[in-house]
Length: 228
Image 1 (cartoon, rainbow, N blue to C red):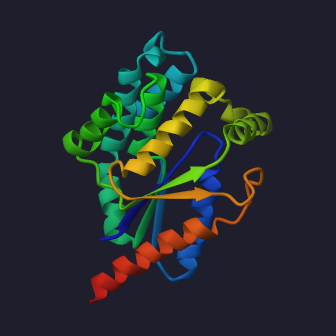
Image 2 (cartoon, rainbow, N blue to C red):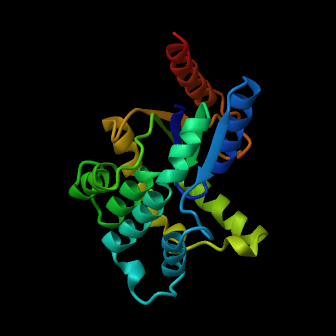
Image 3 (cartoon, rainbow, N blue to C red):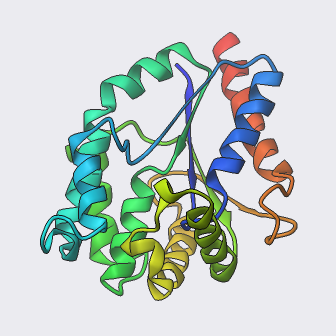
């Protein structure tokens, strides 16, 4: 059974870049790596409803913090068979966003912190009630809000298909979400965390050495235990 590693952070933080670096490094070490991202736009009706709501196409659905959180959670719940199969056939499974994103953004929308009732509700909903696989390690990609926002805007300008949604356009929400993420990591919400800060936060190609080292060390320990 493989280890489940999630990559978390603000919109535009560089999660895809980090996930790509992790995948390449792990594969170079001979490890079998599976990867996917949430929400699963174009693959899940729940994810597509999320997208439509975030772009103002489903009435006032986007205004409901708990309603949106349920859609995010149901998208992941629908993917449990896929995740189970990936974990069975790979040494490491990397996820771009997971349950912590739901806790961080929802709590921030409600002006709560990591220890508020919303984050705990999400933990119970996704892991206890919907029985999602628990992450072995959650990697928080720390980057200044201004940098993440600029990246998201540049991405939108370069690709019309990646127009920013309501969450991405709300700088205040992004700031509060970053603070909730820090609290989740400090408290060990839903498992272990590694906080990765890019050496040059303005550079999306900055080396992800510390995060890669943390994940590969985890994989090596787990595999050593499996071989013992």
